[in-house]
Image (tube, rainbow, N blue to C red; front, side):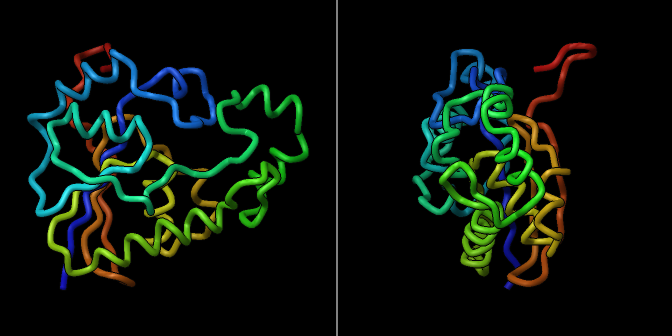
Length: 195
């Protein structure tokens, strides 16, 4: 049976602005405002879930969703790098960052490898087959990993996918056969100004 999985990336927060490995950073006031503006544009669903991070939960709330936390949508576990800025980690552990970016099985941070993340996202995606229309507020890393799994892309394609805040990525089909529609913003950007 065909299922439609609609993945919404959470609103902007300070960690994203600072290029931090999120580490559970909360949604800020600007992100809440933008999510509330997007609320009327959220598609209908039979079931709504959100990643367990504070950012995903508050985005779902600001979007007006009655959703439940889905543990499988936990953000990428980056171990000791969590909360640090990418430039700080690159200066401290250049070889570790290089290995992490080049080898999908590497986890120099003591957390989850890219292979592990893609497998977890894929297992969740395959588990919702036959569930009708599922809406999930999920961290960008989970959205990217789900797309890699759905399209059977090589894991390193993950690094070539960008997921902007409050965008909708749609997958339709079933386990083993997915179609993709990417990056539709929930709120139109005013001319010359990002939301």
